[in-house]
Image (cartoon, rainbow, N blue to C red):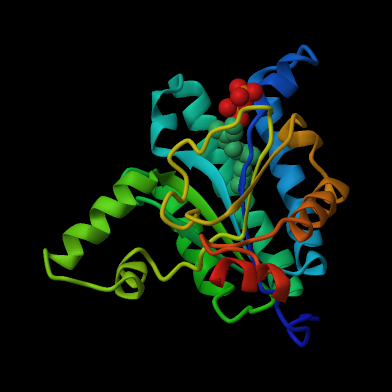
Length: 240
Ligand code: FPP
């Protein structure tokens, strides 16, 4: 049964799922065990996301710079991604989750490209949550690509965002694993994102941590460069 009758939340949350390797090595396991545990963690987060008011969830699964990793790790990640897409499709259909991929596809193995096509096509009609996996993704390359499409014409921000793939601005950017940087992820879309960094390694990041991040966000004041509305007396003072 599909739960598409619920309405989607309006938050766009982006996650840099960092710390898989350290999580595994801290347990005397190979790095790949951390990625496998990371995939499980993502499954749990996707299940919780709609209940947290999230309508779009974009996760960094493989950056264009991750090709620099040892070939065994890259191959294992490609295989894990293909398995994830194939094994999650049924669950996504049941839970109203639409899967889509951002990033370059031309350098991916055929098996992963086939898994992407199938997952995107089968879940196209789902509308409770949009799960966007960034694979072979670089924000700088995405911006360069959109600029090339614009072809030098003077365009609006709205048009540029369409060329970038029609993504909504990110409301909350979460990075696990203790580092505090953006690593070429959604640089345009994060212009006014609230940043939340946690020392928790990604495989340990659970639904409770997601809820806590949303609560932290709820206490932030988003001003977008403006000033907060002041009480009338203060306002009068500055106008005098
Ligand atoms: C960063 O951890 C994580 C990645 C480079 C890959 C992210 C992949 C997953 C969460 C698992 C697979 C995802 C899906 C969608 C199936 P790291 O290896 O850089 O960790 P470290 O900083 O501790 O070395």
